[in-house]
Length: 145
Ligand SMILES: Nc1ncnc2c1ncn2[C@@H]1O[C@H](COP(=O)(O)OP(=O)(O)OP(=O)(O)O)[C@@H](O)[C@H]1O
Ligand SMILES: [Mg+2]
Image (cartoon, rainbow, N blue to C red; front, side, top):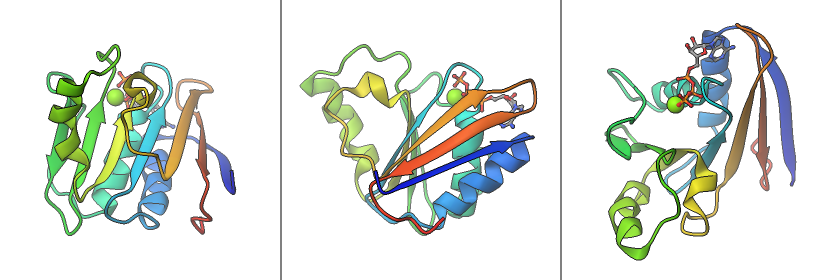
């Protein structure tokens, strides 16, 4: 671990702004794991990052599909593996295109096991209280945040 940034945000907008900072350090092919319990703010974080990467329109939780892919100068993918209980080769074949040439954000990356490409950064969100979240961003690269 080369870089570990810890901070507390006091609103969804602050979490989105922090995500935008991370987004500025990302490039095509990067995977970012986003962990945290239900309602911790994972989708909020991804929304902020996607906006900063040029995604227009709503960025919502991929609840009824495994993922979304958004066109942007660098395409952005958003996956939620909450319902996945271990991947097999066939399921991985369905997921692989989301990682092709994108910056990909993965909620519940733990459920992907060893199938997912190595993450460039890992984000963990924790409830502090109703409006505050502790956010840590870890990376093996110096992302310059
Ligand atoms: N500081 C904060 N940062 C992020 N979200 C916050 C914050 N304070 C309050 N919230 C609220 O917490 C909720 C976070 O929801 P969000 O969908 O982003 O979480 P999630 O971790 O993706 O949940 P799920 O596990 O259901 O996918 C939103 O209703 C948001 O408004
Ligand atoms: Mg979510």
